[in-house]
Image (cartoon, rainbow, N blue to C red; front, side, top):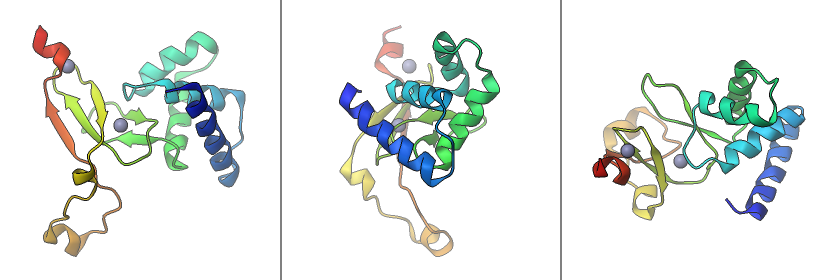
Length: 146
Ligand SMILES: [Zn+2]
Ligand SMILES: [Zn+2]
């Protein structure tokens, strides 16, 4: 992400923190900035390893809890997953995912058709849909080369 995009996201971060009475600490700011830079939908563990370079005294638990609180206040997403460690997404706008079943890489893509995908009647009857995300699975370029 470009530097100015990070700046405007940090403004959103500060606004959301204030709205939700979450203190803006240097730790939280650092974790948020690191997440914004991430293109790989990192797990808490991956984030922890990156954050530790700048904040050697931080604990895994703090990183994990901070990421969860980011998703609670709507500045990060938790990627849908089943039984795997949670993966976090700094991109809170409409988008879809391609997931590689070999390396577990998750790649963002945009598709207007998918954004407006028809909700099946049986779902509409029973549930209130708040988000539409399509997940495509397969083998990524890197893995198919091997
Ligand atoms: Zn792959
Ligand atoms: Zn994403």
